[in-house]
Length: 262
Picture 1: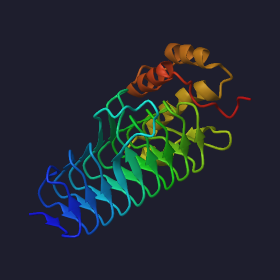
Picture 2 (picture 1 turned 45 degrees about the vertical axis):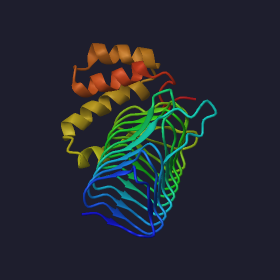
Picture 3 (picture 1 turned 90 degrees about the vertical axis):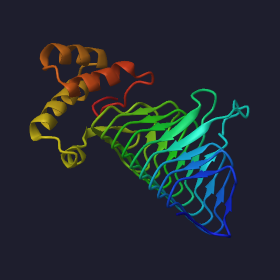
Picture 4 (picture 1 turned 90 degrees about the horizontal axis):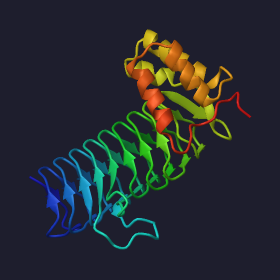
């Protein structure tokens, strides 16, 4: 049974699951879906194209599925997807997609902190955290368990690998490969996200093997192509090695610089 305030607006065509809570002055538009157990708090705005999963919490003044801030957008029908168990805090915004991809996606168990912005056609995988005031431009992809600390600015089309930790206030203009910490100004590789990896259950042996891969990439004096070749020749084939090298090879923007580089 749902609990919908008489002082909220819920469009007759909106589709609400079971045990949904809609607080006073919330606005839920047509062509929206809200999953079981989700709470839409006072003065939150759920617009045309929102697809919100189960057991989410949408805090006051957050806006889901706003029209993209992209001059190429021509009013096409697109969506914004929020996965299960995700929290969208105060005044955060998640815009819907454009014709480019058709959808903006925030995965399961994510935390989008206050005043953050997720632009059109972004894809955030599961367990992603955006710190307060983080701003994502269009078509960014962020993989599982990545953490972008407060005030991070990310350039359009950037890719951020899994288990990454990004220092607050960073300006991301290159791709960030898996498992690393980045920071400083301008942004550089500063080491592995060892604390995060241990929290995720990575063994010391696995962490050491990953660290050796990044020693080749960032601390050996090789350029990236040379480092990749040496890694393939000299280090054992593992799932982590494949993940890192595939990320490096597929990077269109190039990966973040190392602190040995000028």
